[in-house]
Image 1 (tube, one colour):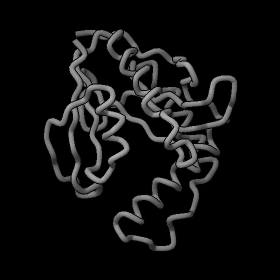
Image 2 (cartoon, one colour):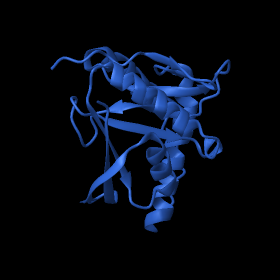
Image 3 (cartoon, one colour):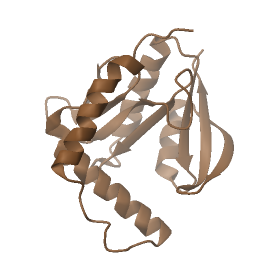
Length: 181
């Protein structure tokens, strides 16, 4: 079944969601360092390399790759910015991830400084509605069992727990699902 593409830009009351721009590189680099640090703290794997940032060239290559591949796939991640600002808060969108193009995963990640303001819920609700408009009937989200804030976001959106699996890298993963029809 062919699906319509996810829009390249969405707006909510407080946020602009848009395709990656090269100006997002520094924010993206900070997000990667925070992710590594969080993982190391959770797993006890502090090895001295956690705070090594990805290079600007690596970040720009990732951003260019994301922009170039978005039209062909029809699903992608969008950056989050406060409306009227270029401040990078994180990203939200649809990915294949552990799922499929027909039933993609909702994915979001925010800088620590953006936590606790409802941005993830606001952005994810906009992406869910946009996914519904593409003609898709189901979305997934996979979340580490330790990630209570993400479970709260998904519960607000109507996702329900489906099953649990074990991932060698991430540990216990909870699969949640949302029927869009």
